[in-house]
Amino acid sequence: MRIIAAAGRTLIGHELVAPPRTHLIKPSPPLLSKLLNLRQAVSHLAQAAPEVLAGAEVARALEEALTRVMIQCLSEGQGIEVGSAYWRHATVMRRLENFLEANLDRTLHLTDLCAAAGASDRTLRILCQEHLGTSPTRYLWLRRMHLARRALRMAEPTTATVTEIATSYAFWELGRFAVAYRSLFGETPSATLRRPPEDPRPQKILGSPWRLPESA
Image (cartoon, rainbow, N blue to C red; front, top):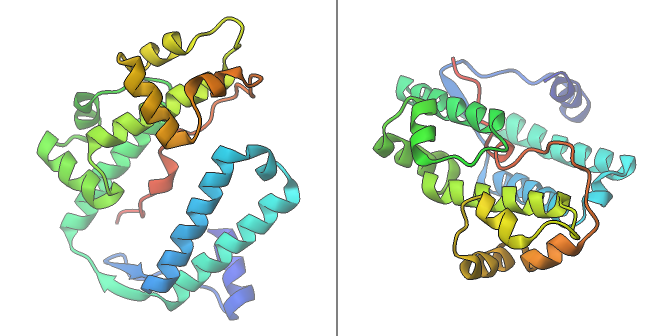
C-alpha cells in the first residue's frame, strides 16, 4: 500500500483516498480490461519464459506498468456501495484462498474446500463462479494440472516418468491427461519432463490471481 500511495502522489499529484468501508471502487470497463490483459500477459510470460522475469529491468518495468494501471483504476473508478452479504462472501473466499496457499503441494478435493471455507457445496459453487469465473471442480482440476506441470519441470528426466507424476496427482487416464496437458500448456508432458530440472523452490500454484479485497 505504501508503494501505491507514493505512486499516487507521483502520477496524480495527491495520495489516494480509501473509500468508506461499505464501498468498493469499480474501474471503468476499458481500464479494468487493460489491467486484466496486463496481468494475463505477465502470467503467460511467467509460464513460457520465466527467465525473462528474472531480469531486474524487466521486473521493474512490469511493476511500474501494473502500478500505473492500478492507480488509474483506483483514482478514476466509481465508488459503489456493497451490503453485508458481499463481505460475508468475501470472507468465505479469503478462507479458501488462505487454505489453498497453505496447501500448495496437496491434491485437494471438493470436501476439503467446503470444510476450509466453512460453506456448503452449493454456496461454494455459487461463490467460485462469482469470484473465480469457474466451478470449484474445474478450479481443482486446473490446480492439479499446474501441480503436475511443476513436478514435471522439477523432475530428473532420467529417473522420473510421466506416468508416475500424472498418477501422483490423480490423473488416472494417461491418454486424456496428455491431450488436456498439451491443450493447456502447448506441449506434451514428456516434452516438459525432458527439459533440465528447474529450481525446486516452492512456487505459488493458482491462488494469487484472485486476491480478494480486505473485508470490513
